[in-house]
Image (cartoon, rainbow, N blue to C red; front, side, top):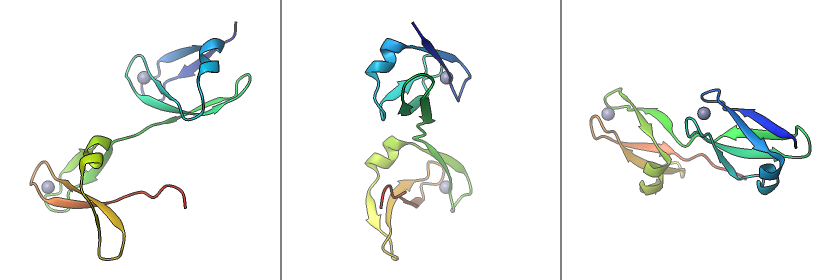
Length: 113
Ligand SMILES: [Zn+2]
Ligand SMILES: [Zn+2]
């Protein structure tokens, strides 16, 4: 039975997917690296070698405009952050810098139209 080998984009671990496993996956499903637990979203799942993944990157690094320190904003933080409308009508999430506790407005990335 054909086994597909996927290289984890984060740690380089080879992940093996059997044809059976692939059949259960749908585009949009998440695959988790067994080695580093990176989450990848399946973007293409066709016949043969037609299989593609995109890294799911929940976290982003933000530089605090107040103290200049970088800090990580995870999806969890964004989910629980209050969303306000800034002066120019853009929706922003308000997160707190862990270093100086300044409140920072993060512009939300629009998906779709
Ligand atoms: Zn990995
Ligand atoms: Zn700060």
